[in-house]
Amino acid sequence: MGKQGGAGKASRFVRALPALLIVGGCAFDLATPPNFTASPLFAAAPLIAAPLFSFLGTLVTGGVATAAVVGLHLYNGTSTHVESVTELITMITVAVLALVINRVVRRSGRQLASARTVAEAAQRAVLPVPADRIAGMHIAARYEAAQADAFIGGDLFAVQDTPRGVRLVVGDVRGKGLEAVEAVAVVIGAFREAAEQESSLEGVAQRLERALTREGARRAGLDAFEGFTTAVLAEIPRGEAMVRVVNRGHPEPLLLYADGDVAEIVPAAAALPLGMGELGAWPDRAQEYAFPAGATLLLYTDGLSEARNAAGVFYDPAARLRGRIFPGPEELLDALTDDVRRHTAGAATDDMALLAVGRPAEGQQDRRRTVSLVRRAHAHRLPDGRTSAGSGRAGP
Image 1 (cartoon, rainbow, N blue to C red):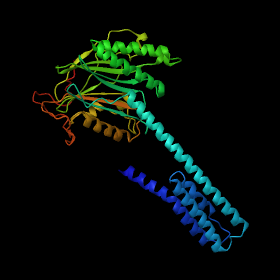
Image 2 (image 1 turned 120 degrees about the horizontal axis):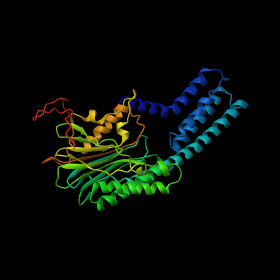
Image 3 (image 1 turned 90 degrees about the vertical axis):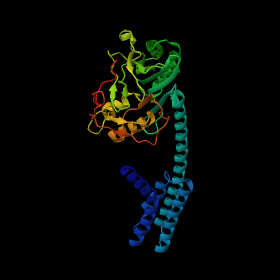
Image 4 (image 1 turned 90 degrees about the horizontal axis):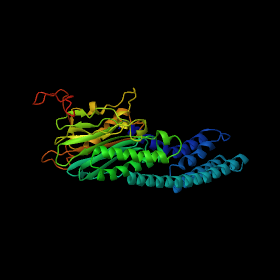
């Protein structure tokens, strides 16, 4: 609130500055001998108004500043002096220039707004937000860009309802810009096809590997050899309280249980990212974890786990979320993104994609937005003798 209030005051001051310059110029001219001039103050007023005000506002500012110059020269009896005429011509020229600047700025603003609209539409086309509820699961997804007004990046997520259950992917494509967006489109397209056709999660991972290998061969230059995507794939079979996970060099997902416990889903063996199959061959093996009612699966990219504060300390999602209870996935992501902004003081350096999937408890409503989150003690003892901090229930 302090920063926002300060920014609002600064904005109001800047918008008031043209009027202050004109008033200050009049005061200066009246308080000094006739051979002193305040023309720089009058000339600055319409130039400052040009990028801030409308065309009419800029015109009025320029007109008032010019009228002030004329009025002061008449008052001082110097209107016929050569210097006064030159000053008036200069003032009129500056006022006209301010109008031209205003038109250019407004046109550029419209073009930028159009570009943002196109970029946002492209982002939604490449990375559509999944439905709130899929096959009985509560779903929430979020894409947080590090740069304001940025819509396209290399982070990705997708959810697919298949005959074998709900299948998910969260990934991070190497690089930035349009090439990264192309790779995102390749990964998501291959995932949606493979998720429907492959009988196993391992088969889905291999399909993605082949798709990225073809994409890497198509590209020229450095990306032909170093292009890769870290990814984690998950499968929630129908009618089973468990989740299968294949991790290809990606940050470990988290399981948040209904009692506030948090467990990291650590792979049994490290694996290279997708698209790096030429460096080594090994069979993908999905690991199974308990996914009971009331639990939430959180998948994310390294923009979350590598977010740093002013002291250079990384954000630790497991530690920050342990002991907290959320009404649902949407509220979890709301709280998580707010917490990351506080941790980084709004100075995040990397995009992050977040995907949360909740298995609703019996009788749980679809949305409980009015219920606030609750922090529990880290060492709260559970009925079976465990403590809620670090019980490790996500073990295979």
